[in-house]
Image (cartoon, rainbow, N blue to C red; front, side, top):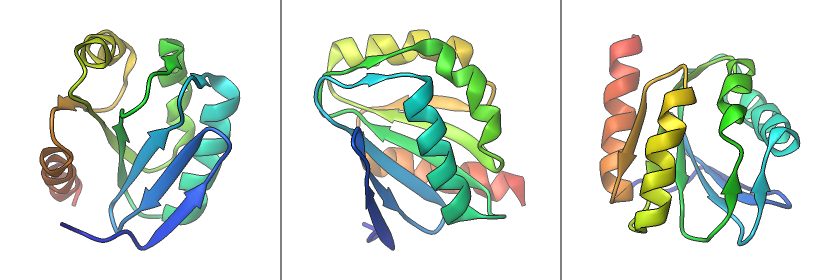
Length: 127
């Protein structure tokens, strides 16, 4: 498995940056809404600069997501896809609902390794 190049700890999430994707693990009981998305987008835009990337949300903890945040993600300049990884039924059901709001490719996975493989494929298609 790939090793992260850089890790950033925010109040609401831990971000692990790789060459072409970022893995986010939101903290327990967070409400993920516009202020969090704004900060996340700023950090991702800074790290990836002019490179395309995929956002992978590894949902380990319980938290709430405002699905309308996906409408603000166009501010992430080079975002090419979103992957949700979880083995919790509730998280998978929520992700299936959130997919309706995404304007980029959006997939749900049970394993991180599968999401990473998908991220590589999405970015190959962008080249």
